[in-house]
Amino acid sequence: MPKMKTKKAASKRFKVRSGGSIKRAHATKRHILTKRTTKNKRHLRGMLTISESDKKEIRAMMPYA
Image 1 (cartoon, rainbow, N blue to C red):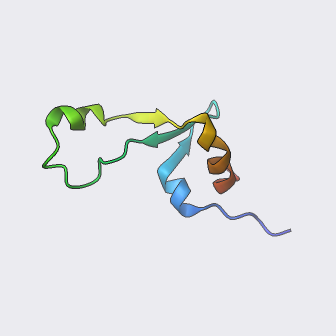
Image 2 (cartoon, helix red, strand yellow):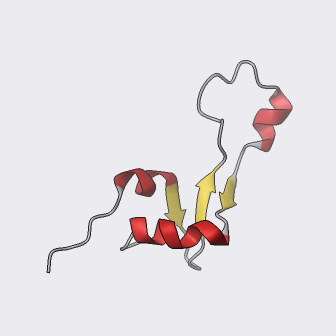
């Protein structure tokens, strides 16, 4: 059997923690940040855990993670 391929877009966006949960970054933190307030940018720091409803889809995109 051939190996299953990882969706590279998913592997760049999500990381699997040691406990099995998947983390992601906040949205709207990439560009056009000049119009955003300092407080808003500060609150967008750090990572989030994905919701349980999305977990199955993301696991399917990253079979070896």
